[in-house]
Image (tube, rainbow, N blue to C red; front, side):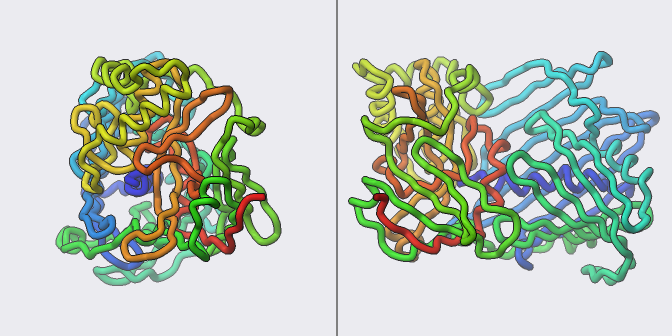
Length: 479
């Protein structure tokens, strides 16, 4: 599940909120104390324009397979922090996405995005009060570093084309150990208001707001960034298997009958912290009690009555940057896969089987591919199956979405009875949202839904915080 990797790129706006005014800053990126990459920030003033570029490169393991992530953002602003233009690019393995925008004098933004070989242009309104890197730095500088001082600023997110609030509280000053020696720094705690899952980070800065250390919990890990020399930041990485860390063991084996008819799972956080996040769907009921969370999961049958979810919106049937359902290649595959189906239910069943066989190479080496990329190069794992199936459904007028969660398997990576990160598709058929899984033999009660979205990996914030700290305390058949 490559959305885990995209979570790392969320550090860019967090660091931008305290962007270093120094011309050139290098940082080493560590995950639970193991070096996984580097961060490089440059800050250049040219006349009335300020250009800030932040680039992060990370290397991770997924069940023994190396996966590389590169994320970069360039912000162009006036010297007083007025946004002029931005460009953001993310590459996971060889799969790239790019977003560019130019802010017009009337407050509108001309945007060009490129995903999977498809380019899309549109015009959006600039979020009122949103700032880019230099504007955020200036806002923080105006607030000062008096302990107890609180700031609230809006940081523009180039990849998702919206803004998130960042609340910062200034703490005390003290000595902080760094690779190149200790420094006296001021602690600043931040809360980044990501949709469905606020992220917490702590930065340590000098008097000029240069960031020397930044930490953030991520999927049960401690993610740390430390300022150091370029040689230190670019030193060889150490292996860190994020997929194994995100797996969740079941207390006991689950039988085919239980998976077919339904399960009740009692779950809790293994590390405390913020409440666990789960999606409430027609197939998954989420309840809470003093001991944690109860999940009641059951595949829909003909007699089941939907009672929890809203009807689809027009956007659930429309193409987007990641589900290019209007592309001729997608439309052609959709008609080919649907065959002689007469109903939306039959259509989705046929498409599910079609995608299962169409994606010939099943592996973990692909980045996060869009539906059009998968149509042209049919390889990948669960995420590629999910986005392609969702796009094929939309191409035939069926509302669809992509679900991010975990799925049960008897054995994975040498571990028995385990839930592993997974993605699948939901379609609105017969008056309800119903799941279809082309990567596995089909949907069953062994699927835990963390969040739902439109296929854009930047929309799956809620599940990031739950992964890595989920514990299943008990499993029982659904009565």
